[in-house]
Amino acid sequence: MLRLFSILLLLGGIAAAVFGGAAVMKSFKEPAAMDMETAGAPLTMDEMAEAPMPEVVQAAPEPELAMEAAPEASMEAAPEAMEEAPMATAPAPEARSMAKSRSLSPSEFSDDETASVASVQDAFDTAENVAEDAFADVGDAADAIAEAAGVAAPPPPSKSHAEAFMESLQTVPVAHETPKTAEYKRAFDVTLALDATGDDTAVDALPNRGGNIVTGEAKVSERVEARVSGANFEIVEMSPGIQKLSPLTENVWRWSVMPLSAGDHDLVFEIYAIDQDSVVPLRTFRDTVTVQVSGLNRAIAFADQANPLFVLLGGLGSAIAGLLGAVKFFGRR
Image (cartoon, rainbow, N blue to C red; front, side):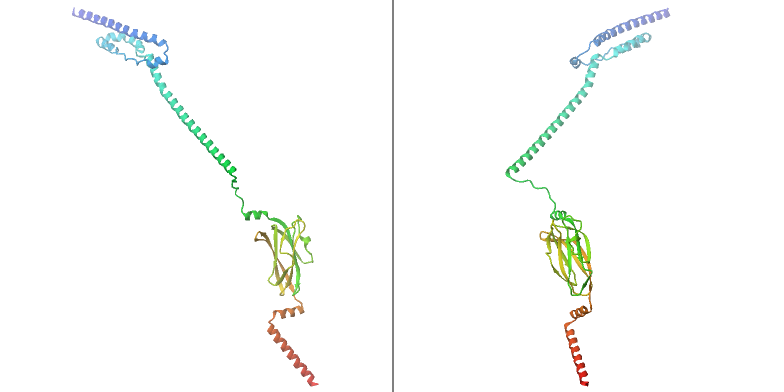
């Protein structure tokens, strides 16, 4: 009897658990159906912004109590609860819309910040362009004022006078003639010629007396000076020492040279460019002239080079000796 009563009590508990589980499931189905109906209609941006956050469903603990009261009934109702659980725990469309709106807000903020930075950069570019235009206007105004006042702009830096002078030099052919040999105390002529007419030689202007002819080139200015020097010669100019280059004929310099001693001696030809008050050496030629001395010229050279006192004493001695010899010669007769 007690066993039968226990079985009836167990069956009654199971029935009560099944009835309670059915009631709980029915209460879960009604909110889920409402959520499905509202999910079908799309919400605007204003509704999404004004929609409140969904409240947390607090009906979840009831199945736990039911499962504690009737574990066997909960095991039977578990499959049905698992099927309905996703619908009950799914977030409401309002919550998703709010989350979406919140997720969109950072990107909107970054776009605004980028736009503000771009506007600031545009403002700086505009200010820079305005400043450049202002400086350009100031420069133009200064130039106009200087032009109106008659103030000329400073000339560009020019070359130095020495550089300009060296660039103005022109290259011309040069030739000179000296005798191969010369006699003591007998003068000879020396000739130097420049040709600025465009010819390739200046030999045509030389006397060509069979002496030493030397040719070459030299850079000369518009005014040229030629000189001849030698330590053992007496030199006299026969033409102007400074001459202006002639485009029509050759420029010729002549000197009369007399040897002052026997032997081989050098004659030096020097060409100078005249730059205002200064003289610039341009070219130097050196020739050797051999001075020959004959018997009579040797005696003359000895007399010229000897000490006059010794020559006088020697002459007196020679005269006395000659006089004594003549007296002795005529006295014997």
